[in-house]
Image (cartoon, rainbow, N blue to C red):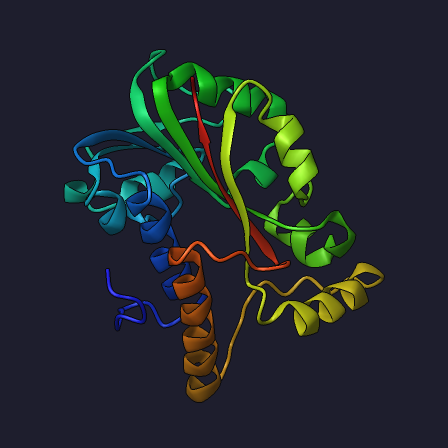
Length: 232
């Protein structure tokens, strides 16, 4: 996928995040992999994942699973990250994009991820950054927590952490102020309704961050942490 490629998704964050996912997966130099999309949601990332292999999906929401286009997955199962309904040593890659923060027992989820990964397999993920920014927005989205890099290194004990990086740096300051204000209120609006021009501007700003990530240049902080771990 080319950076800043025109897409069908109008939301700037979704479009730029799909490109970030492509960059992370391409860095593994793996093709024809067996992939598990853990917490696949509505499947926006599935077209990209299919470029790297055959994809099985799992999600807690049966209605969402029933909506997924059949050609985008090999197998689907209803379940959650604390008990992954697939055999041990089944996958070359497990991905969980903005999923682990939704899991009450994230340590149990990581244990399950390690179990279903083959030796030498990779776990690729994104999570929201900085617990200090936890607000009613997170509660409305069903987040139990946000993370920092030290927390993740501890959580992924037993996996080799290959990379940890920040994303959403460009809008960190205004969004952080907004989230801090939300902490003491009952505001819980999870929607983003931006004018077209603002939406496109933010998209191209995040495209710039995607370019930096592809070039393996580190951002100093951000609203999101992305990472790659390897099972030895």
